[in-house]
Amino acid sequence: MKAIRVHTFGGSEVLQLDDVPDPTPGPGQVVVRVRAAGVNPVDTYVRSGNYAMLPTLPYIPGNDCAGVIETVGEGVTRFKKGDRVYVVRTTTQLSGGYAELALCDAPMVHTLPANVSFSQGAAVSVPYGTAYRGLHHKAHARPGETLLVHGASGGVGVAAVQLAVAHGMTVIGTAGTERGRRLVQEHGAHQVLDHTAPDYLKKLMELTGNHGADVILEMLANVNLQKDIDVVARFGRIVVIGNRGTIEINPRGTMGKDAAIFGLALWNAAPEEMASIHAALGGGLANGTLRPVVGQELPLKEAARAHEAVLKPGAYGKIILIP
Image 1 (cartoon, helix red, strand yellow):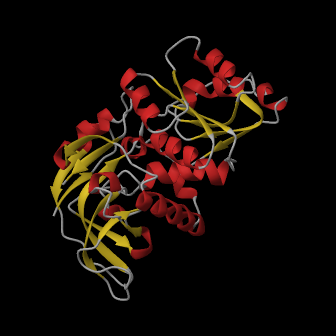
Image 2 (image 1 turned 60 degrees about the vertical axis):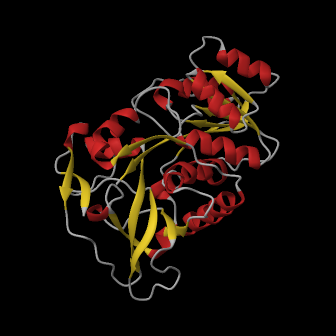
């Protein structure tokens, strides 16, 4: 099969299209023929070598993907050849999502409803899993609270908006382009702000009657964390989802408000947490509440271009590779 492999950590140029052996499922495993693979910012951090957990070289990047069951291993009864599925996590670094075939443990594979495309399916696991865990497992968001999605036009941001609206929250999203702001509004945000405007935080406080945001999901903490502390409500919760550098903050801002700051990495979720996340996401996909947005589709061989695009300002939905 064809697969993208990384033989040495570095820039996007290290992403190499290789011929590698087809994977074979062991007991409790399945092989998925990949029809679409999702690209996440975390993929670029791992590829560069700047991440807490690094695979042994060479490796095939990516976990988010969707496709059809190709073969099933001994003991697998949930799936059969031809079933449409999306993947939460591939089995090993030798079988990532940037490939024509992916080897997976059966519990890490879920049914893809007929109303969801393969490209949309590849936009589920990391974005929606992260948004769900941030809202519910970390912030314990409650209906009626106000949510600020600080950077709402990317994959995680759109997922958070949809999940929070369905949960009965008042949602304020921000985006840096007019196109991005239209997208956030189309997916249910009650208010959308331009985070490049100098007065947008003042506007946010006005919109909340100077109460601030009860929950903040932060996509670029190295730029925004102090701003979040300034506008979070009393007893508010800030969840750091994305970060690309260091920042100096004044922790005193959290003290008078009894505010909490949480870090989030989806791979830290326990198996029972992952099971609950995907039970909820599966229901939302099937009934149409959750509608993943695909911003760009590229051929698998253009993985380097995808890695460059996913880090550019002006995020818009999920970037997808097509094998």
